[in-house]
Structure formats: C-alpha cells, structure tokens
Amino acid sequence: MTSEHKYKMYPAIEPNNKGHLTVSDIHKVYYEECGNKDGNPVIFLHGGPGGGCSPRDRTFFDPKCYRIILMDQRGAGHSTPPAELRENTTWDLVEDIETLRKHLGIEKWVVFGGSWGSTLSLTYAQTYPERVKALILRGIFTLRRRELVWFYQDGASIMFPDAWEKYVEPIPEVERADLMGAYYRRLTGDDEKVRLECARAWAGWEMATSRLHVDPEYLTRTDDDTFSLQFARIECHYFVNGGFYERDGQLLANVDMIRHIPTTIVQGRYDMVCPMETAWKLHKAFPEAEFYVIPDAGHSNKESGTEAKLVEACEKYKNL
Image (tube, rainbow, N blue to C red; front, side, top):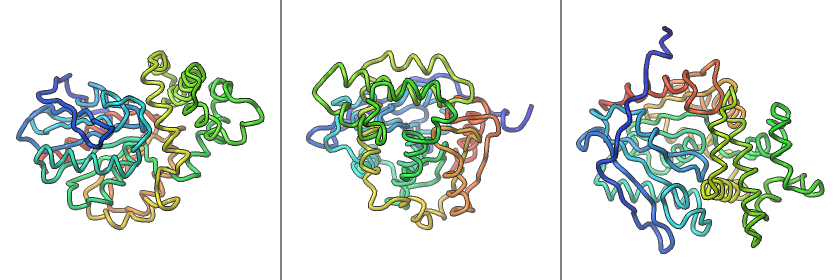
C-alpha cells in the first residue's frame, strides 16, 4: 500500500451541538460541533460558494482529538434565507467565521477548506492570521479572472464538450460571449422556471467535471431544486463580482502575510474545475507550505488519493 492511501476517513459521527447564529438583519448561519468538546478546534469551510456542508465533512478529523466545527455559509445549506444574495460577499463570510469563533469561545483554530473553501480559508487567514493555527487547503482557487474564464467561458469546455453542450444550452448564441453574465441575468430574474432551468445547468456543469471519473451520484445533486438554486445563484453572484476583491490576484499577492502559518496544500493533477496552475503559483509564492500533487485525481475531495492525503494532513495538525 502506498503512503498516500494509508490514511482513511473516520467513521460517521453526529453533532453534539448545533444551532443558527444571527450574523446580520437578513442572515442566520447554521453551525455544528462534533468530536471532543475540549479538543483542538478545526473549522471546515465548504466549497461553492453555495455548496453547503455534509455529514461526510465531519469525518476527515479524529473525533477524539479535534473539536470539529462545520458552518454553512450565508444562503447555503441549512443557513437562512436560502440562496439569498443580499449582504452576501466574501468579506461578510470572513466576518461570519470570526463571529462564530468568538461565539464558541475559541482563541485559535485549524482552518480546512477545498475549492472555494480554499479561497475563503486564504482570505480569512490573511485577514486574521493571529487566529489560525494551521491551514489545510485542497483544489486551490483564488478567484482570478483567468480561473473563472477557464471554467465558465473557454478552457474546460475543450475537455468536456459533451457536458459543455448542456451547460450552454439555456443561453442563446448571441449571449454566449459572456456566459457568466448571461447566467447571472437569468438566475436573478423574475422567471422562476428560467431560474431553475439555469440553476440546474450551471450546477450540472460542475458536477460533471469534478472527478477524474465522472460520478453519477454527483450528477443527481441537481435533482434538488433548493441545492441547485443555492449553488448556482451564489456562485454566479460571487463570480460576476470578482469575488469582491480589490484587485485580481489579491490572494496570491498577499501570501507573505501567512507564510509563517503551518500549511498543507493538496491538489489533483487533473483538476478541471480549479486547474493545477493556481496551486503551483501558490506553492511558488509559499515554499514553506507542504505541497502534494495527487497524480490520479481531479477536483473532488472524494477521490481516494486526495481523501487520504487530507486525512494525513489532519493527523499532522491534530495535536497543535
């Protein structure tokens, strides 16, 4: 057995505390705690944005050692109201994480995030570096324009022309020069039928491209109307607004602020959603971080090599 497959996910576990935290006049974010109440705190930041957490996300961590915290970001998962775009920016989410930390009485914690979760983890760490014990990052995404164009306009389409055909189908030819803009108009429009059709197509594109081997179970996630609307509306809202960053490439430019934080980066070689170029740039800017490329993986944290390396990273930091 190779070392990258030595580590396994922990058994399913139930929360010992959960609730909704009011973070604005509009939003309440759902959170839950599992594992050791006196353990090393770790927060899991989900992808999307808009993806929400799942019970499986609890099982990367040793429940005897970790105080495991999951939070559904604004408008996502069990947070309310669902798919709400008002008062929903990257900086709102950063402050929500900090509000939750204070609410739970935690001084510092390990921060774990993949895909958009890696974006949010980097943003939080650069904003509050003194609150981060360690970073575990997967499928690196920094929301640069280049990354968005690759996946939503021109790039991944070359590798998945069949899935791409379904993605562009709801958008008339004349509007396809700016697919994110065309989707945004429909996802925020008044026509409920069009909103849902576009939400399913947008979400379906990512579900179809997330793994090296297409996972039929992933594709069925778009059968859930609420999930599709949360996922598509919030993602598109963030992406047409450039992630609400001051400048393109901000997270990579500011890496020096966090280079003292113990960090592990895990990247699938054949990640079509968040291609390895971005992870490589982060690695070059942040040579102190451990950097692992999984040779037979795409974007998903469910692929065996990626899953095992993430658990290994969690094992490394569990006694910090």
